[in-house]
Length: 402
Ligand code: ADP
Image 1 (tube, helix red, strand yellow):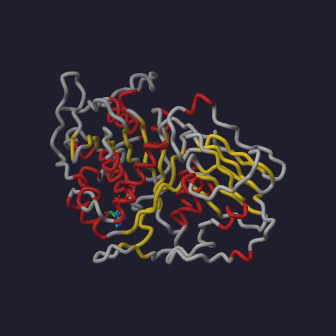
Image 2 (image 1 turned 30 degrees about the vertical axis):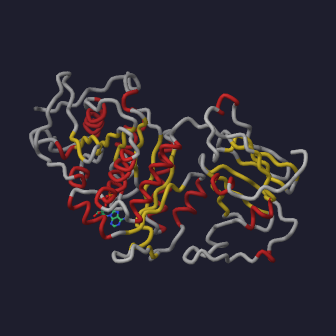
Image 3 (image 1 turned 60 degrees about the vertical axis):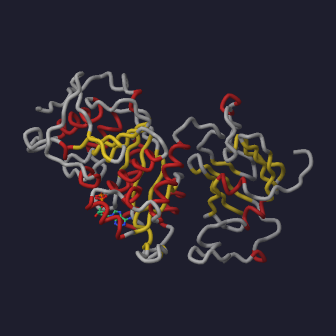
């Protein structure tokens, strides 16, 4: 066949419901493992029972077919309706420039052609009914990213970074670009964030740790997960059997499954308190509004529908399942698990409770995506991140008249 890209149509959003949630995986620079993350994440979503498609939008250097063991260079077949039948591997559907024959590939891709091919890869493919379509973007913040962000109703973007400062700075630029074109950032994935010992599976942090979490916190986006360096990932990529399939018990595979679980929770309708918020504790300005009553369908135990304060000392939460909770703010400070308060290697507490003033109070509480809050305190501590799950697990203090 000769693949002819669709010409652009203004009906961009029309007829795309069958694609499900469209999630872009981006990175500021190449080699950080973006395609590896896209591929394993797509498979982890499929393992949850979702119907998932993967578009290798890296038109210049498609690597996804190789990672999935898809034989390239054979012309794809067309459906009776004239759509390209996507390749299938390990239960997911895939479209990539690497699947076109040399005759179908343009020798040089200029800007408008990039846009046309991407539209073809998304709109002219017989995907069937999908729950998710994952787009593995080429690295950088250029034309392709802008084209996709503007032409397709993206649910959001995931930004992949390695832990080094320079890579994180570049990731920060990528996040800013997505925000400028109004694509929500679903979160950061930190890749190669520690080393997995091939014999005992123990993860050792060889680069400085926690950079992804700090950047995520400073930008107010979630850290979706930190994937360790694992030599098996390279072999799996070369052999066409991604890690989550070939080594489901590897620590990195568990992280992929956890990211998939977060995503499938996140991209459903937001039911908790509306975000973002930045609540100033002392004068109560910008306190998050309670969730709309209609948003309370279902009964997730880890989604707060109200955040309030009873007095200067008590944070009050009402959870989606109706549970009320009061947390003493000094307990909140003591429960901080940031790198300054807990040794990340051993898990031992570094914070000496005796140094935390009895009259400590929060100064600000702000939303981190839809999964956590950040809290700064009157003792100057400001790197505390509390996931909703962690808050829900905290002890409720007995307070009357809440
Ligand atoms: P990108 O898409 O960002 O250019 P790739 O996904 O192609 O990056 O990955 C680059 C190389 O790094 C590949 O050889 C891949 O197997 C390897 N790699 C990716 N993630 C990891 C990891 N967590 N541990 C070890 N190797 C990895």
